[in-house]
Image (cartoon, rainbow, N blue to C red):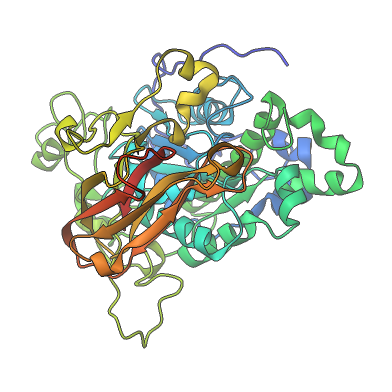
Length: 509
C-alpha cells in the first residue's frame, strides 16, 4: 500500500448544514445507510457493517456532537488506546496518515470541514486500562467533544481489568466537558487464540451497555474468515496483534460507517422526517432564545466560532482569540435527562450497600508525566531515583511505552513518599513486573497510606513472563476523600543491594 501524505485541515472553510433554504434536501451522499450512495455499504455489505456495532446504545451523546458539527462548529476528537491506536505497525507516529485516527479525522473534515477542529492521539504502546483509568487526563485535552477508546487487545478478560475499564469510561463521562465516548474494537488473532470468542471485548461491551456508550468493532468483518481460514486475514496485520495500513483502513471504515449511520439519523431528525429519537437536553426552542443550538442544545460557543455581536453570553464563552473559557451548559441544556447522565452508581453498586457510594475522581502521579514531574527534592537522600530514557534507549519507540519511565531503587530500607488526592477511596501502585530469568526472586516493597503501617501491602516484582510488564496493585480501599500520601519502602538487608524495584506511578480513584 502506498504511503499517504501528512494531513492538514488549516485551509478548510466551515460549513453550516442547518443554514439552508432547502432543509429537506439531504446533503450526504451516503444517506440512506446501505443505499446506492453508501460506498462502505457496498464495499463490506450490510450484514458485516450492521454486526460491527456490538452495542449501538441510544446514541444520545454522539447526536449532541453531530448537532454541533451540523451547525458548522469545530469538533475536538481525542483517542485513547494501546499499540494499535499509537500506530505501531502503521507508521509508528500517533498521527501517521496510514493510521486509523488520522484516516478518520481526514474523513470527518470532508463531511464537517472546519480549520479549528482538532485531533489528539493520546494512545501509548502496550498500555491498558489499568493506566488510563487514572491517567487519561495526562493524554487528552481538558475540553474535547468525542473520545475514542481502543483497548480490546491491551486488556485482559478478568474482573479486575473490567473494573479498571469501567473506571476509565466513567471518568471520561463525568468530565466537566461532558464528552461523547465511543469504544472501538480491533480484532486480534492472538487475543482470540488466548481467550477464545469471549475475550476483553465481551467485558468492554458489558461496560458499554451499563453506561450507554456505543461499541463498534472490526470483529464481524474478520472473525468468520479467520475461523474458516486463519491465513486469509493476514493481509491486515504486521503480526498476530498489530494492524498494518490495510488493517487501519478497515478499522477506520468500520468507525466511519457507524458515524455515517448516526449522521443520517441526525439529518432525518433535524428535517422532521424521523421521530425515532430520544428526549434531548433542551427546552422549547421558541423559549430558549439564543442559547438553543438547533434541536439539541449544546455546550455554547467553541473555538473558531465567531460570537454574535452584542451578546454578553457569547463574550463569556470565548476570549478575544475565540478560545473557549467557560464550560457551563446553557440553560436550555440543563434539564435532567437520565439517558444523558452517568448512572448513580457503578456496575457492582447495590442499593442496600452498607457504605454510601463515593464518586470517583481519578488522580495520577506518574513518572510518565514530563510536564509536571515530581520535584527533585522528593528524591533527595531517599535512595530512590527517577529514570527517563535517553540516547539508545529511545530507539525503536521504546520511550513511547508507559514502562519506559519509572522511579527505582536497589537500596533496602530506602523510602519514597508520594502525595495523592483521593476521591472514590481506592489507592494503587503501578509498578513493573520483571522476568524471573533476569531478576531471580526479584525484590519487594511494602506500601501503605499515611500512617496505616498495619495495612501495608507487600509487592514483589518477579514474574513468570518473557519481558517486563506493568501491573497495578490496589493497596488500600475506602480511604477518605482529600489529601493523603503513599509511602513505599524497599525490603531487604540494609547495605545489600537487590534488583531494581521500579514504580511507574501512584494512582487514586
